[in-house]
Structure formats: structure tokens, C-alpha cells
Amino acid sequence: MVKQPHPEVEYFGKLDAEKKKKIAEEKRAKLAKDELKKLKELHFMRCPGCGLELETVVFKGVAIHKCFNCGGVFLEEGTLEKLCGHESHIMESILELFRF
Ligand SMILES: [Zn+2]
Image (cartoon, rainbow, N blue to C red; front, side):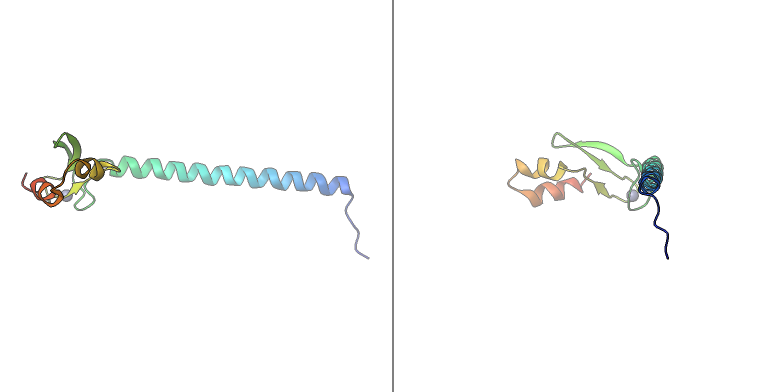
């Protein structure tokens, strides 16, 4: 015959398990946060193509990031829309960008 745990013991056991699960999730979240912080420190304003520093330049009134080593250009979220939003000659604008 299997002995059933007392309902009170089962309740506190469940509370304990939930508490431990929450602690484990917090540790995992903290690790992810630390990892993200580490990655940002390592890669912030670095060219995704060659790894050297990006320089901020203003192009048509909008700040963009350009690598003067490999010629790569990095646009932050919304930057392309800002550049193209008020331009009808999109290709001309993009080509001009690479003439620096
Ligand atoms: Zn580069």
C-alpha cells in the first residue's frame, strides 16, 4: 500500500519546489542579462564585418555608423526609413552613401 503524503506536507513541498524553480529562473535571467552586457561591451560600435571601430557620420541629416577600414555601413533600427522616407531617389541616396 502506497502511503499518501499528508495534504499539508504536499502543499508545503509544492511551495518549496515553486520557490526553487523561481530562484533557478532568476539565476538564468541574470546569466542572460550578464551575457548580453558582456556581448554589448565586446561589440558596441564595432564593425560586424571586420571588427574594427565604427565611426558616426551624418548623412543627409541622419547619424549612421561607418567603418573606414572595410567600408561597411551599419544602420540602426529606423535609420533606413528616415533616409528613404523623404527621398524619392532611394538608389541615388544609397550610392551616395558609399562615395565617402
Ligand atoms: Zn569593417
